[in-house]
Image (cartoon, rainbow, N blue to C red):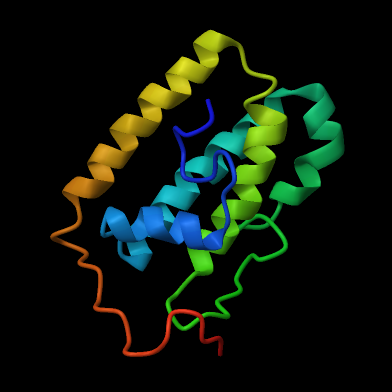
Amino acid sequence: MSGHYPFSGNANRVSVFGFFERNQLSLELQEQYYKWWYDLAKNFVAQDADLKAACAVNFQHFPYGQHAERNFHLHDYKWATAMVDLGAFISNAILAKMSTEQQHKVEHDHENMLKALLAQRDKMPRPAPPEVGRYRHV
C-alpha cells in the first residue's frame, strides 16, 4: 500500500504538506481530509479487541497525536503534522491488520473522498502563502 497515501513510505510534514499544496487544499479541506482518516482509524480501533485495549484512549480527543493542535510553522503545517502522526499509526497498526480486500476498499473510498474534496476547492479556496522563507519557524 506504500505510495497510495500522503503518509505512506518515508513521509514527513513537508511531504504531506506538499500533497495538500499540490491538490490546492485549503485548511478547511485539509481538516476534512484528516478527519476522514481519523474516523476510519477510530472506528477500526473500536472494532479490534487488541487495538481497543491498547489505543482507544488515544482517540478520546480530536485530533490524534503528539502534534495535535500545534501550528508552529508560518505555512500552516497543522494538518500535515497531525496527518504524519495519525498516518504512522494507520500504516503500522491498521493497514497491517487489514485483509487485502479491506485495503482495496479503503483505497477506493479514499479515492472517492479525495475527488469530493477536490470538487469543493472553488468554494473553499486556498489562500496565497505568506512572503516568508520556507523553513522559517514562528
